[in-house]
Length: 497
Length: 121
Image (cartoon, rainbow over all chains, first blue to last red; front, side, top):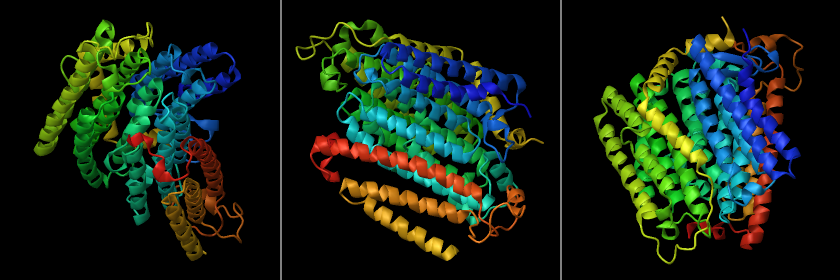
């Protein structure tokens, strides 16, 4: 059993960066570049992990403190978590790159970068950990730092949204904790591979089913799925732009990742029930989110509602349960992260030019008339989100539809495709309002400079590349799904033997 | 012993939920902490608690991890370590929650949950 040290680097780099940023509290500029370096190291490490997983074709693990599992805590980089962590670290790197040139006041606060890196640590750790109690610790780290980041936002309403989110998400972690306690009471272990081994051995007391319900509630709350979604639009809208870009694209994917792990590794026998619930909740989420995005009058809030709808698409694909549908879910999750974070940053770029830094459509209508580059990128992003070829959104929509056909669930498939058109409607409506309308007297007097276009341009470039050269990603995800079909590989890689 | 734990957890959970649904933000914060205490008690009960038996005197606990050996002979120290972590984390969240309530009460000039509603506008 050999330890792969880059796995530790993914978690340790942002954490060390966070501490070092605190020591540089007097030099804000240096702090920002330090955070950028820390995120770049994490990105490099996750790239290394992914290439190692592809090269060896088996999961890599790191035993913390060299304690053997199941007694010790392990970080596990299998192909699923390596893909998700690479996605997350790319978006986090983009978010910090945006924050480096961000004109928001909250970015100049000494703790901003520290909290941002703590959030990234929680995010990466949550994807990588192979121990459910450590998952709880990382999730709380993520929640607490994101709450503070929203509470110090330039938007004065951030405080109220942060207060609400802290209460609601603490209930989520409470459920997670009850689930962990129930699992520990049943199996006397916290290691996910060990739990999976005992569950597949046919031992299935009623308490473990209760634990499955609790864990599912916690994950659904983290990804803001229908009955637990009320905090999401408020909390995401009031967040500072770089934080919003990370929250709305990758932080919600922690729940998606947890659900995929639950249905493929842990509770494979209960998966049918979980799948049915996910399809229903997903369809409700798609329509709730898409229609909410259509009627809202704030560009950032529209994208927050849109995340709610897009998570619905992913859940429906997980719920279909066939391998092809699971490919669709994972590809959709990866593509959506890049598109959504880029669009949010572009909205931030536009609203940073206005006097009040608002994103209300009544205020920023026509603001982008002279910003041709931003308009073009926003147009590309909008098309990618709606799933128009040749962008990456099209690829994810196609794999999703293939999944629906393989599951032969025609009604749900029809509803999903129909709701995809609503996405096109709200994206194009917003694009026209911001970039096509002539500026009136209300919107003249823009600032000469705003936030930098570099980070969103890079992310849109990733979207275009993933749309034009989609084959490597699809093939890789196909391999991931084949691998997820036999949880024995994960179990033997972690436990050995 | 288990009955006492079950009743205590249930009562604490009920009090926590009741307080959490109050209008007063301070009471909400108290409910939040009581709920976490209830969970910690549940965790403690999950760990084969028997106060008269010290851990690690018999090798049974060390072996039983991963195997379904009947437990309940001695207290499990791992659970207590987990509770300690959970207490630290919930305490941090509680402190943050009180800080947010402090700022909110100054900004909104009220502690009534229903009046902290500028987001609806």
